Amino acid sequence: MDINERREALRARVREKLSGEEPETEELVVQETEVIAATTEGEDLLLIEETNGLLALASSLIFIGSVLGIITGILLLQGNPAELLNDSLDQESVVDVYGIVLLAESGESMEDVLIELIDEDTKEVIQTTETNSYGYYQFENVVPSSHILRVSSEGFVTIERTFTPNTATQTPFTLSEGNGTVEEDFTETNSGWSLENAIALSTGIALVTILAGVIGIKAAVDSRKASNYRRTQYLAGFALFSRGFIIFGPFLILCGMGLMILAKDEFQHPEVE
Image 1 (tube, one colour):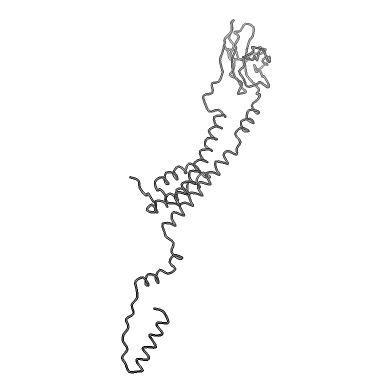
Image 2 (cartoon, helix red, strand yellow; image 1 turned 180 degrees about the vertical axis):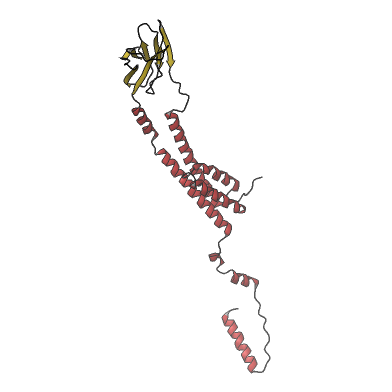
């Protein structure tokens, strides 16, 4: 009821009382819509819907965790694998080869044994030396490619060993009395991971990390829109592989996935049977 109407009603009652007439009782009728409007006035400004708040928080956590994963992947790529490989090859461009020659029967060291370093491809003698009084020999600045070491001494069987000088010390030579030549193949077969393999693996992990982070951002957007619960959870689960700063990123994403479970009913398609 308007304030002016209330004033007029009050004046009318006063006049009736002064004139001796019994005032009629006026029933105050309050509409239901007025009650609802009065009790909910300003509610939109103060009330925050709980489920929407959970989705907003979940989206923020997943987004932050995914961004940390992208940063981690970029840091992995900043190692410049090509430069690392080139530096490693430069450091191993030449090696020094050491070894000892022993007598097969007694195991004693043999002095003045001729040692020849031969290029396997050209069969050209690159360096020659003789063992010292302790039976040791040495070749300096040997390129790490396939070579042949020929060990010979008068009255003993000659040994020709094919090898790749990746390590400095060679397996000892043992000479037996006799004639002829014995061939030995000490070429190393690389059955393990090479430096190139390790670099390729590291680069692949970095790319997967960045991809998982990008997918995590997509999951954060879908979570905020509440478009599809199951798909969003799958995307967020894959985003765990972003490994943002080892554990911090995945922890934030897991927290976001937990909050999405609490706000599951707010999604447009909470379950797909």
